[in-house]
Image (cartoon, rainbow, N blue to C red; front, top):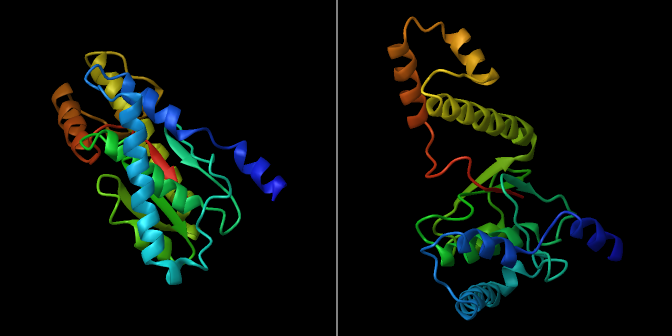
Length: 215
């Protein structure tokens, strides 16, 4: 158990401070420390209620985290690799629930990706998913995970390239944007703008690149 805890602890940082720093940057964010503690306590209570109501179904799921300090958050894709029953999914869902209490309109984690052998949500997710109202829950088969990550990273790269190009007033394409322009063979600037406008509309996120939890 000590070795397992040490290995996981190297991958994670405390969620309370990370999420608090994110929202405190917003001048309109006026939660006090006591209010944050109360909201997080409310989430703890909701999760405990679900645990109690589904005790029989979940008693063999081993969903509780290895250590109560393993609450973590990082920008971009955050992934945790740990043995079955170490509390990965449970912790992720709790994190998503905590942050949505702070800002319902702009979730800290817009996407929570659950990786499973079957490609279906397990009992843990099904038990708690109703609490997660703002973050989108997605299930990916483990055999398809690498392809999903590659596609996600490509979209981030392309999106950033387009944004930089727009900010340069369509005058200074970076290497990725230059590749796109050469591939498309646009005849004029109007065609470029039409393509860029259509491409940006295909991104369904409120903000991007967004934070993504990967379990």
